[in-house]
Image 1: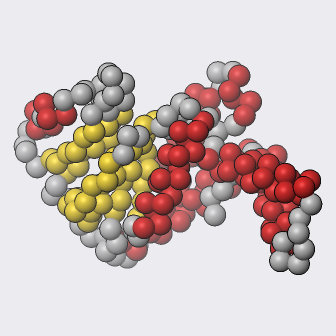
Image 2 (image 1 turned 45 degrees about the horizontal axis):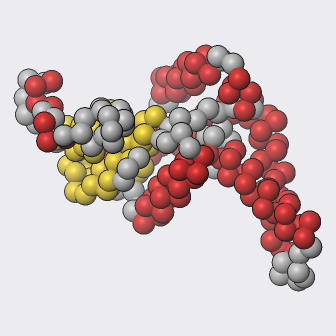
Length: 225
Protein backbone atom coordinates (compact mmCIF):
# COMPACT_ATOMS: atom_id res chain seq x y z
CA UNK A 1 0.00 0.00 0.00
CA UNK A 2 1.32 3.43 -0.87
CA UNK A 3 0.30 6.95 0.09
CA UNK A 4 1.41 10.11 -1.67
CA UNK A 5 1.29 13.64 -0.24
CA UNK A 6 1.40 12.72 3.43
CA UNK A 7 2.49 16.34 4.02
CA UNK A 8 4.40 15.11 7.05
CA UNK A 9 7.83 16.54 7.70
CA UNK A 10 8.46 14.41 10.79
CA UNK A 11 8.10 10.83 9.50
CA UNK A 12 9.13 9.41 12.88
CA UNK A 13 5.68 10.29 14.18
CA UNK A 14 3.97 7.86 11.79
CA UNK A 15 2.38 4.88 13.53
CA UNK A 16 0.71 2.45 11.11
CA UNK A 17 -0.11 -0.08 13.85
CA UNK A 18 -3.10 1.97 14.99
CA UNK A 19 -4.79 1.32 11.62
CA UNK A 20 -4.94 -2.46 12.15
CA UNK A 21 -5.52 -4.91 14.98
CA UNK A 22 -1.98 -6.25 14.95
CA UNK A 23 1.57 -5.02 14.57
CA UNK A 24 2.56 -7.21 11.64
CA UNK A 25 2.80 -4.29 9.23
CA UNK A 26 6.07 -2.67 8.22
CA UNK A 27 6.43 0.78 6.73
CA UNK A 28 8.91 3.29 5.42
CA UNK A 29 8.39 6.97 4.65
CA UNK A 30 10.07 10.01 3.14
CA UNK A 31 9.43 13.48 4.56
CA UNK A 32 7.49 16.22 2.83
CA UNK A 33 9.20 19.37 1.64
CA UNK A 34 7.60 22.56 2.94
CA UNK A 35 4.29 20.76 3.54
CA UNK A 36 4.31 19.39 -0.01
CA UNK A 37 4.75 15.75 -0.99
CA UNK A 38 5.79 13.03 1.40
CA UNK A 39 5.57 9.29 0.65
CA UNK A 40 4.51 6.36 2.80
CA UNK A 41 4.72 2.67 1.86
CA UNK A 42 3.09 -0.01 4.05
CA UNK A 43 3.27 -3.80 3.75
CA UNK A 44 2.19 -6.95 5.56
CA UNK A 45 5.42 -8.42 6.93
CA UNK A 46 3.86 -11.88 7.08
CA UNK A 47 3.65 -11.91 3.25
CA UNK A 48 6.23 -9.41 2.04
CA UNK A 49 9.70 -9.27 3.61
CA UNK A 50 11.56 -6.08 2.74
CA UNK A 51 15.30 -6.47 2.20
CA UNK A 52 16.18 -3.02 0.87
CA UNK A 53 14.84 0.49 0.46
CA UNK A 54 15.77 3.18 -2.08
CA UNK A 55 14.55 6.73 -1.47
CA UNK A 56 14.66 9.78 -3.68
CA UNK A 57 12.74 13.03 -3.55
CA UNK A 58 9.92 11.78 -5.79
CA UNK A 59 9.86 8.05 -5.21
CA UNK A 60 10.20 5.41 -2.54
CA UNK A 61 11.23 1.88 -3.56
CA UNK A 62 11.05 -1.28 -1.48
CA UNK A 63 12.89 -4.44 -2.56
CA UNK A 64 11.94 -7.72 -0.93
CA UNK A 65 10.58 -11.24 -1.09
CA UNK A 66 6.91 -12.09 -1.53
CA UNK A 67 6.06 -15.50 -0.08
CA UNK A 68 5.57 -18.00 -2.90
CA UNK A 69 7.30 -15.90 -5.56
CA UNK A 70 10.89 -16.76 -6.41
CA UNK A 71 12.08 -13.48 -7.90
CA UNK A 72 12.33 -10.30 -5.81
CA UNK A 73 9.24 -8.09 -5.70
CA UNK A 74 10.04 -4.41 -6.16
CA UNK A 75 7.45 -1.74 -5.46
CA UNK A 76 8.00 1.89 -6.49
CA UNK A 77 5.75 4.42 -4.76
CA UNK A 78 5.92 7.53 -6.97
CA UNK A 79 4.87 11.14 -6.53
CA UNK A 80 5.70 12.73 -9.86
CA UNK A 81 6.80 16.36 -10.22
CA UNK A 82 4.91 18.87 -12.34
CA UNK A 83 7.96 20.36 -14.07
CA UNK A 84 8.84 18.73 -17.41
CA UNK A 85 12.57 18.76 -16.69
CA UNK A 86 12.04 17.13 -13.29
CA UNK A 87 9.74 14.54 -14.85
CA UNK A 88 12.47 13.60 -17.32
CA UNK A 89 14.96 13.26 -14.46
CA UNK A 90 12.47 11.13 -12.50
CA UNK A 91 12.10 8.59 -15.31
CA UNK A 92 15.82 8.53 -15.98
CA UNK A 93 16.47 7.70 -12.31
CA UNK A 94 13.74 5.06 -12.23
CA UNK A 95 15.00 3.41 -15.43
CA UNK A 96 18.54 3.30 -14.09
CA UNK A 97 17.44 1.73 -10.82
CA UNK A 98 15.23 -0.75 -12.67
CA UNK A 99 18.15 -1.82 -14.84
CA UNK A 100 20.28 -2.35 -11.75
CA UNK A 101 17.67 -4.38 -9.83
CA UNK A 102 16.23 -7.50 -11.44
CA UNK A 103 12.81 -8.65 -10.27
CA UNK A 104 9.06 -8.18 -10.65
CA UNK A 105 8.41 -4.44 -10.70
CA UNK A 106 5.23 -2.58 -9.78
CA UNK A 107 5.02 1.20 -10.15
CA UNK A 108 2.14 3.11 -8.60
CA UNK A 109 1.29 6.54 -7.29
CA UNK A 110 0.59 10.03 -8.60
CA UNK A 111 2.50 10.61 -11.83
CA UNK A 112 0.96 13.97 -12.79
CA UNK A 113 0.63 12.95 -16.43
CA UNK A 114 -2.27 12.40 -18.77
CA UNK A 115 -2.37 9.67 -21.39
CA UNK A 116 -3.51 11.65 -24.42
CA UNK A 117 -2.61 15.16 -25.61
CA UNK A 118 -6.21 16.25 -26.20
CA UNK A 119 -7.12 15.36 -22.62
CA UNK A 120 -4.99 18.21 -21.36
CA UNK A 121 -7.74 20.59 -22.47
CA UNK A 122 -10.92 18.90 -21.23
CA UNK A 123 -12.37 16.82 -18.43
CA UNK A 124 -12.40 13.44 -20.15
CA UNK A 125 -9.37 12.15 -18.30
CA UNK A 126 -11.41 10.88 -15.34
CA UNK A 127 -13.61 8.94 -17.74
CA UNK A 128 -10.50 7.43 -19.35
CA UNK A 129 -9.24 6.33 -15.95
CA UNK A 130 -12.58 4.66 -15.24
CA UNK A 131 -12.39 2.78 -18.56
CA UNK A 132 -8.80 1.75 -17.81
CA UNK A 133 -9.82 0.44 -14.38
CA UNK A 134 -12.66 -1.51 -16.01
CA UNK A 135 -10.20 -3.08 -18.45
CA UNK A 136 -7.99 -4.16 -15.55
CA UNK A 137 -10.91 -5.61 -13.56
CA UNK A 138 -12.37 -7.38 -16.57
CA UNK A 139 -9.02 -8.87 -17.56
CA UNK A 140 -8.39 -10.18 -14.06
CA UNK A 141 -11.80 -11.85 -14.05
CA UNK A 142 -11.19 -13.48 -17.43
CA UNK A 143 -7.76 -14.83 -16.55
CA UNK A 144 -7.58 -18.54 -15.83
CA UNK A 145 -4.24 -19.81 -14.56
CA UNK A 146 -2.61 -22.67 -12.74
CA UNK A 147 0.74 -23.82 -11.40
CA UNK A 148 3.10 -22.53 -8.75
CA UNK A 149 2.43 -19.03 -7.32
CA UNK A 150 5.35 -17.41 -9.17
CA UNK A 151 4.35 -19.00 -12.51
CA UNK A 152 0.71 -18.06 -11.94
CA UNK A 153 1.63 -14.46 -11.13
CA UNK A 154 3.90 -14.12 -14.18
CA UNK A 155 1.24 -15.60 -16.48
CA UNK A 156 -1.38 -13.23 -15.10
CA UNK A 157 0.88 -10.22 -15.72
CA UNK A 158 1.48 -11.33 -19.33
CA UNK A 159 -2.25 -11.81 -19.90
CA UNK A 160 -3.04 -8.40 -18.39
CA UNK A 161 -0.38 -6.68 -20.50
CA UNK A 162 -1.75 -8.24 -23.69
CA UNK A 163 -5.28 -7.12 -22.83
CA UNK A 164 -4.09 -3.55 -22.22
CA UNK A 165 -2.15 -3.61 -25.48
CA UNK A 166 -5.28 -4.67 -27.38
CA UNK A 167 -7.22 -1.82 -25.80
CA UNK A 168 -4.50 0.69 -26.67
CA UNK A 169 -4.27 -0.43 -30.30
CA UNK A 170 -8.05 -0.15 -30.60
CA UNK A 171 -8.61 3.20 -28.87
CA UNK A 172 -5.31 4.94 -29.68
CA UNK A 173 -4.55 4.01 -33.31
CA UNK A 174 -3.05 7.39 -34.24
CA UNK A 175 -0.53 7.33 -31.38
CA UNK A 176 0.35 3.70 -32.12
CA UNK A 177 1.05 4.47 -35.78
CA UNK A 178 2.98 7.63 -34.89
CA UNK A 179 5.23 5.80 -32.44
CA UNK A 180 5.94 2.96 -34.85
CA UNK A 181 6.80 5.40 -37.66
CA UNK A 182 9.03 7.44 -35.38
CA UNK A 183 10.94 4.37 -34.22
CA UNK A 184 11.35 3.15 -37.78
CA UNK A 185 12.67 6.56 -38.81
CA UNK A 186 15.11 6.60 -35.88
CA UNK A 187 16.39 3.13 -36.78
CA UNK A 188 17.00 4.27 -40.36
CA UNK A 189 18.88 7.35 -39.18
CA UNK A 190 21.01 5.35 -36.74
CA UNK A 191 21.81 2.86 -39.49
CA UNK A 192 22.81 5.71 -41.79
CA UNK A 193 25.39 6.95 -39.27
CA UNK A 194 27.33 3.71 -39.79
CA UNK A 195 28.00 4.67 -43.42
CA UNK A 196 28.01 8.47 -43.55
CA UNK A 197 27.75 11.70 -41.56
CA UNK A 198 24.20 12.92 -41.06
CA UNK A 199 23.21 16.29 -42.47
CA UNK A 200 22.16 19.12 -40.14
CA UNK A 201 18.53 18.53 -41.09
CA UNK A 202 18.80 14.82 -40.29
CA UNK A 203 20.46 15.54 -36.93
CA UNK A 204 17.61 17.86 -35.97
CA UNK A 205 15.09 15.28 -37.21
CA UNK A 206 16.73 12.60 -35.10
CA UNK A 207 16.64 14.79 -32.00
CA UNK A 208 12.99 15.80 -32.43
CA UNK A 209 11.95 12.21 -33.22
CA UNK A 210 13.70 10.91 -30.13
CA UNK A 211 12.04 13.56 -27.96
CA UNK A 212 8.62 12.68 -29.35
CA UNK A 213 9.17 8.94 -28.80
CA UNK A 214 10.19 9.66 -25.22
CA UNK A 215 7.09 11.80 -24.70
CA UNK A 216 4.74 9.13 -26.07
CA UNK A 217 6.26 6.37 -23.99
CA UNK A 218 6.21 8.40 -20.80
CA UNK A 219 2.56 9.27 -21.33
CA UNK A 220 2.04 5.52 -20.72
CA UNK A 221 -0.17 5.08 -23.76
CA UNK A 222 1.76 3.15 -26.31
CA UNK A 223 4.89 1.24 -25.49
CA UNK A 224 3.80 -1.93 -23.72
CA UNK A 225 6.24 -4.27 -25.43
